[in-house]
Amino acid sequence: MHDLVITSRRAVLPDGERPAAVAVRDGGITGVHDPGAAPEAAERVDLGDVALLPGLVDTHVHVNEPGRTHWEGFATATRAAAAGGVTTIVDMPLNSLPPTVDPAALAAKRRAAAGRCAVDVGFWGGAVPGNLGRLRPLHEAGVRGFKCFLSPSGVEEFPPLDAAGLRAALAEAASFGGLVIVHAEAPELLTEPAGPAYPEFLASRPGEAERRAVELVIRMARETGARAHILHVSSALCLEPLARARRAGIGITAETCPHYLTLAAEQVPEGDTAFKCCPPIRSEDNRDALWRGLADGVLDCVVSDHSPSPPGLKVPDFAAAWGGISSLQLGLAAVWTEASRRGHGLGDVVRWMARNPAALAGLDGKGAIAAGADADLVAFDPGASRTVDAPALHHRHPVTPYHGRTLRGVVRATWLRGRIAGGAPLGRLL
Image 1 (tube, rainbow, N blue to C red):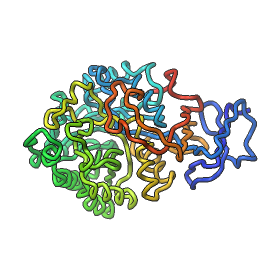
Image 2 (cartoon, one colour):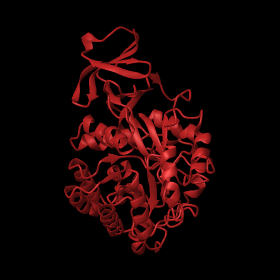
Image 3 (cartoon, rainbow, N blue to C red):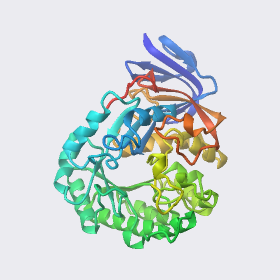
Image 4 (cartoon, rainbow, N blue to C red):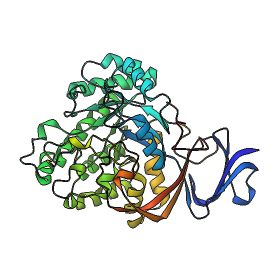
């Protein structure tokens, strides 16, 4: 007797979309069957035409706890994740205090998260000046890789690496098969905004700053043999060097984010700093080019870069406001709204938001509906729509650029290892 069988006429499987019955026992998927041949189960759920997706994996989330829990926290962030169809997040090492730059800080982060998570949680470590000798111990303690900045991070306790520091971090990570993930903007091309409006902020962080930093990472990844990943690509200028590096067999991957794929600089309302992030949201033409990069496989993943802050830090001045977008609960619907309009299917979205992020972070058993995988599943109604009401979101603060937007696709239910997620803290620390 199985614990649960979920049937859908639109199950999104590794080999395509088709009718299927997914059988679950002891938190895992035992098999994927034709709907008429499913085993007996204590509970049966028939979704009809509502799609069944694997739980999404979001490898770019700033939870900020401990230390800045008034910005966000494990309880609120993971409830938002579950409501948005995300069953695994990987927490970034900065904005928390202490930052996750040594095993003691990782232990503090795990203590803060224990018993509070509605979904599974993994952790990135940090690579900062002076902690090179702590990267291997962090790896052995279970982090998924190491984040670094090439330009100022926005918080004093997480300074950037210079070119020599980047090379050293890549070489050290290569020595034990680790991964370095990079906020890639060349600091010498960044300037202070000339004024408080969005065009001035956008001009202060040009796309060429991203491209130059990406080219540096590619060169050093080639020289050290390390695996590197480019975070939150916002500029289409990065696509050509990334494509060349991939053709050359260099171990580099890249991601973008829902806000770069669904929003555009031309649409940013005056003074609405909920739209501010670093690197910035760019033009409509740039957005179209990022979609082509996804379609061509130059960009691997779509993840949130959920980076919330209290409303008081989002002052209506783009030069002074905190840069970060809250979207953890909304990423699936935002991406599906635009992806479906551009002719992409649910299988594409699952590849970008579940399978590839799971592979990036080495999360076996995540990101696919297959025998042996965790029973992390999402009932997603792709034809329904909902208007975003920021105060109704599970994020700690009602600040999001999607407020008032009508998005296509509604999460009807999320299962974590076969149990409904979002209420009790069922999540594990990975």
